[in-house]
Image 1 (cartoon, rainbow, N blue to C red):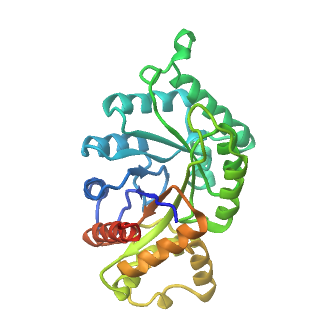
Image 2: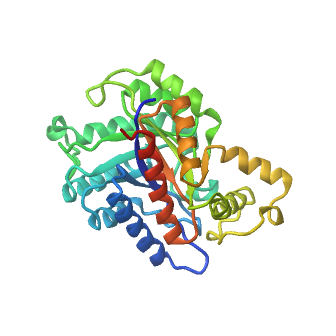
Image 3: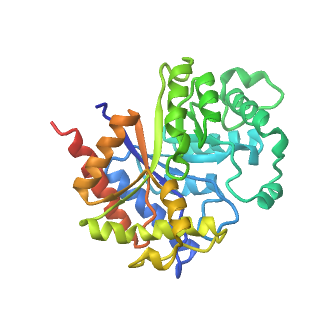
Length: 334
């Protein structure tokens, strides 16, 4: 079994009874904690028009987290590129890389990160997204290149900086693109697991080496809820289950505290839908998490696992990442 890195995905979750300021302080606390635990990177994801998620101004929040940490890589998982001008993103991440050299990642997705009406307010044109996304990636690469110094339009800051790009996907479409461009590929297994195995196979089989990457690099995002006991972990996970029920019901309210019995909240059909979407959710104590990590890696053979952990109590969330770190290390102890 191949060893793998572990990293963090954070959405700056907003909890019932807490402010958005509290969310940002919790995110910084989590970044510091996981940095001390030697997690590789801390990514923030762009979402809009959701009372439960405060990471809409992703570049700004990346700067806040990077400024409050010392060595962990900080970046986007991801920036929804068709929501933006390529030049503006190049300038924003050029600024971040200039402020925090060698620590900034630019993960890129094509989804809106929101509902249709809000996507329209962001200025997206659904008719051209599949053409626009690859073109914008090439534009970013041009803006970051030294060769663009003689162009009429330049990204300053940004030009000549080594800012790694990552392609994000929740279906097979971006697997083909990441393979063609020779870029690292991250899959959203934490909410869209259905095509993950097929996407990884496509990426591996069709990968074209590039000046950015010599061989495939695969990242999988999963949910992790770890605790001292199995019973506690399963109770903590009900915050995650409630969050997905809210998505099913188109209810964007802040995250809820855990409950004793989810059957009081979801219908059998909703339960089936949520559990299908959350099939790659690792819930349990350290030994159970270790076994689930092992089974996952034996099946998918990833280079990096990105952990998303929706836990209401902040201290329990910190503890969850610590237990996951111990479980992963235990798999590969000498």
